[in-house]
Image 1 (spheres, rainbow, N blue to C red):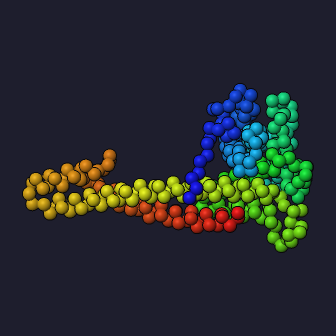
Image 2 (cartoon, rainbow, N blue to C red):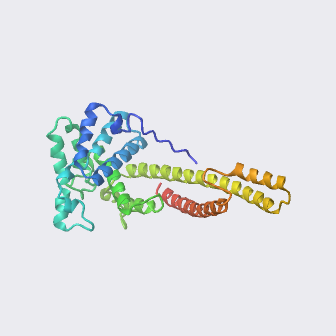
Image 3 (cartoon, rainbow, N blue to C red):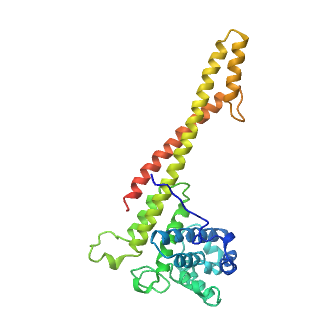
Length: 306
């Protein structure tokens, strides 16, 4: 299994605690957003950065595109809270208002010389290659690359956040939604390019990232199961010593087994509660094993999108 290494401290992976003054100013605009939108913006930026790396973009473009992604929803600060935070589908009228965050964000950026270079991210992140997006119905040739990349990252994070995934189990359903935007049902291969909403190359980069994340999650889970197994083995040895302690007839034998048990006890464990701890470890292992099986099954589904 390929080891997953993502350096959050690289120059490309922008973090507000490791930025120059100019970039801090640009990203400071996020302070005007609600907590959910800010978190979404940070997620989209992080994913955008990784997509750029998978697409082998130059570092300067990766840094530029990542900053665009941080600022892509800046226009939402002027969307009424009752619409922005609504639980449930928007009405047609509310949706039209929501869509204006793209042009509002573009105007905010264009009005500020420090933000102007990143205006494309705000304007184009909801455009679709086939012209069905908004605000201008731009088509493939009219949408800048940063807009195409941010759209994929934005849509992926929006779906994942809405479904509140706590692990990558079920993430293939999200990929299926995006995959359908590349290959609409009942469409011939000859006309498929005209109907794509998102760039297949960017989707492929997304799938690679999700595979890496899932493999990393599987690796962490396997390490944790190994840790549980080591403790179950240790507690089993305590069980054997305890049985010998019960059967011991002589005091020096009892003292030997008692000391042996004490040497094997971890902090918080005692001669009275080790059996309960052992039971809890066994329960935890069963739960984690089930999670591992689900993740492995999910990984197989995800790899089909390659």
